[in-house]
Each structure stands twice: as C-alpha cells, then as structure tokens.
Amino acid sequence: MDTFSIFVIAVVLVMVIILFMGALTVRQGYTYTVQRLGRYTKTLQPGFHIIIPFIDRVGSKVSMMERVLDIPSQEVITKDNAMVRADGVVFFQVLDAAKATYEVNDMILAILNLTMTNLRTVMGSMDLDALLSQRDSINGRLLDVVDGATQPWGIKITRIEIKDIEPPRDIVEAMARQMKAEREKRANILDAEGFRQAEILRAEGEKQGAILEAEGRREAAFRDAEAREREAQAEAKATAMVSDAIANGDPQAINYFIAQKYVETLGQFANSPNEKLVFMPLEASGVIGALGGMTDMLKNISKDIKPVSGSVPRSGS
Image (cartoon, rainbow, N blue to C red; front, side, top):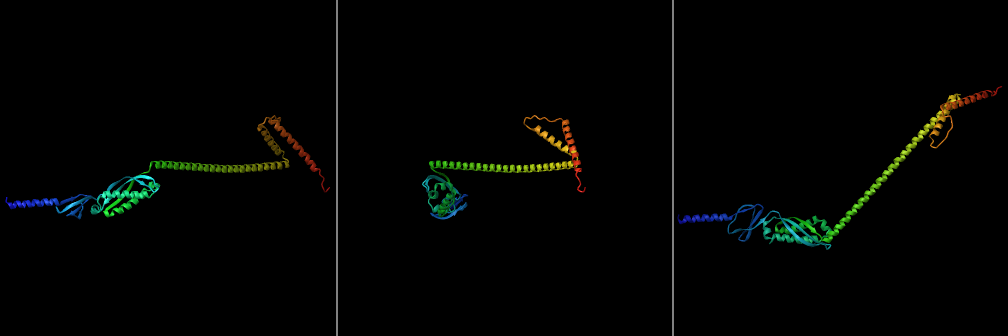
C-alpha cells in the first residue's frame, strides 16, 4: 500500500470521527443551548442534530418539564404581631431555555428566594384569623407576584401552594377553647330552640284538644236538648191524647196514663241508692186493683157530672 492510499484512509477516518463528534441527539422533555465560540447561537429541540465539532458546543441542558420546588419552613410575623411558621411548594416550568440559562445565574435559587421573601410579605400583611382561613387568597397573591417576577427569565410559575401554617402553641390552645365555647353555645341554642318548639307544639295540641272538647260538649248539649224537646213533644202529644180521651168519656186512657206514672215512680224508688222502706201494693194484683178503684171513681164522677149538666134550666122556659 502506497503513501497516498494511507493518506486517503486517514482523511476518511478523521472525517468519520468529526462527523460522529458533531452528531447530537436531544432527549424528549429537554432542550439544549448551543454556543459557537462561546456565544449563544440556537436552541436544539428534541431529536437528532448535527453541530460543528470544536466550534459549536452544548452550553446547557434544560428540562422543559414542570418541576416542583419545596419552600422550607420559615417564621412570619403577622399584622397582629403573631409569630407563625409556614412552608409551601412551587410548581414551575421553563418556557425559554436560553433566558433561563443566560438571564439568571441560578434559576432554582432565584425562584426559592423570590418565593420566600414574597411569602413573608403577603402573610405579614394579614391578620392571624385571615391567614388561617384565606389560604386560596394567599396562594393567588403569591402566584401573581412571583410569576410576574420570573417572566424575564423565561420561567412560568404554574402554582404556589401553602402546605402548612403553624401558629404558636398558646394561640392554638386559645383557639381550641374558643371553638369549644362556640360549639357549646350552638348546642345550647339548638336545645333551647328544640324545647321552645316542643312547648309550642304541646300548647297547640292542648288548644286543639280544648277546641275539640268544647265542640263535643256543644254537640252533646245540642243532641240532649233535641232529645228533651222530642221527649217533651211526645209527652205533650200523649197528654193531649189522654185529655181528649178523658173528655170523650173513655176511662181506659186515664187508666193507662195513671199506670204509666205509677210504674215510673216505682222504678225511681227502686233505683234510689239510699236505704228505704216502702209499703205499697207491689204485687201485680194490688196495682191492678188500685187502677180498678181509680177507674170506678172516675166512672162515678162522670155519672154525677151528666145529671147536673142536664138539670140546668133552659133560657127559654
């Protein structure tokens, strides 16, 4: 093999090596910044690229994925001079690899310090009660401030979340006592409302019961009056019929009437609760005999009345 052939082979090998050195593959989720002779020239996206060896070089490898940064716990003095400890977490994403590399020296440290200082500023402008109950407001205010500050760096702050707010122990105990007192107060109010409602319902029930009872008494009185009226009408009718029968000279009617009253009176004596001793003709024959005697007496009276009425002188004689 002559010298020329060796030279050609050496040149080809050198070109292959240089080409291999210039080949570059960028992984998914990353971007590479390229510097030519120390100056930024371009940003390589994921995929296969070829750069000029010894002239171009990779300046930095920047992750374009969203990342999480923990904020360490720090003491914060609130507006009402209460000392609390708070920590949180920041979610951010690099949008421009060149700015994130050349506009800020240490991107992670810059975001951390910026978030911590603004956390103290925002939380220090609020009272303790508002601080514990308005975490969403704190997160929103922090996000607006920190995201606006990191835009020149090509970084997008997607979320800032406060993880824990720890008040002093004495304040926690006072809050626990206050919460217990509030719960006892609400329980007492609910008990009083329940008792009041029960009393109202009981009074309403008694009122309705009294109304129904009064209506019942009124209905009963009306029914009793109606029954007495009908009984009086029946008795008056029976008396009228007996009177008509007597006037017509029928002694059976007066016998029936007297016998009825006799039996009713006898029943009242028998139903009386007091001790009594009654002498009367209790046998049926005695009662019939008494009735018969009354009948004969009435017949005699009627006979005496007729002649007298007939002996009255006429006005014309």
